[in-house]
Image (cartoon, rainbow, N blue to C red; front, side):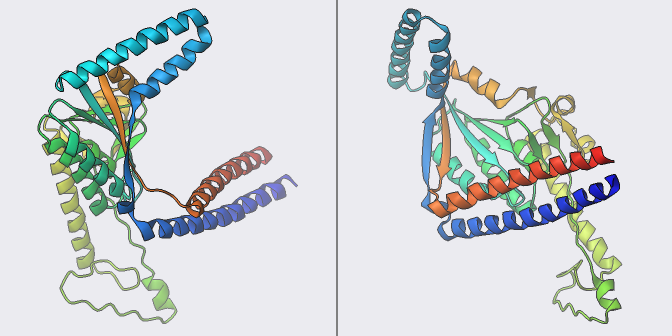
Length: 349
C-alpha cells in the first residue's frame, strides 16, 4: 500500500507539474505578446527619493517606541535639519553628494536591458562629476548578444568622467550577469551571493539517428562553408563540431578580455574556468571588492548623500496585470504542491 501511494504521489506530481508549467508558459506568452505590442518606448521615467522612504521607516518605528512628546520634538528637529540640507544643496551644487539607484533583474534574454538603456540615458543627462550610480544586479546569465548589450549599458555609465559605478549583488551575478558586474568600479556582494561562472556553454539536441531509423531524410542546404555547424535534424560532422567549439572559445576569449580590462588586478585565467563562488570565496579570488548587502550600503550612503531611485516604467493594462498575477500565483502553487508531494513521498518510503 505504501509503495502504491508513493508511486501515485510521484505520478500526481508529474501531472500537476506538466499542467501548471503549460499554464505558466501560456500566460507568459500572452503577457509578452501584449507588452511587445507597446514596447518600452511608451513608458516614462519615475524618480523616487529614497532618503524620504528611509525617513518614513525610521519615523514609523520611533512613533511606536518613543513617547509622543519626544517623538514630536525629534520630528521638528529633523524637519529643520532637512530644510537646511536642501537649502545648502540648492545653493552650492557641488556640496551635496548624489546617488542614483538602478535595478536590473536578468532573464535568459536579458530583456530588462530595454528598460536599463532608458534609465542609463536619463541618469547620464543629469549626472555630474562626483555622483555615484548603484546598480542592484541580479542575473544568472543568458544569451551572449543580449548580455553583451546589457554590459554596454554599464560601460556607458563607467565612461562618464567623474561618475562612480557601484554594482551590488545580493543573490547572483553569474556568467552574463558577471560580465555586467565586472564593469563597475566597485562590486559589493552579500556573503552568500553567487559570482563568477566566467565561461560559455551551448547545447544542441540532435535527432538525426531517430529520423534515420524511421526512414526520414532531412536535407540541410547552406551557402558558405560554416553557415551551419551543428544542426538539430541533420547529421553533424567532426568538422562542424570543431568549428562550433572554436566559436565558443572565441566568445570565452572576449568574455575574459572584457573582465580583465575592467578589473586589471584580477587573475582572470584562474577564475575563468566556468566555476562560480559564494561571496566570501569570491572576495578572496578578487571577483568582488567587499562583502555587503545593497540595503546596508544604501542606508549608510543615505546618511551622507541624496539617494534617487530611477526606474523606467511601462504602464500595464488590466489584462496584463491579471496575466502577471496569474502567472505568479501558478508558479507559487507549483512550488508548494511539488514540495508537499515530494515530502509525502519521502515519508511513505
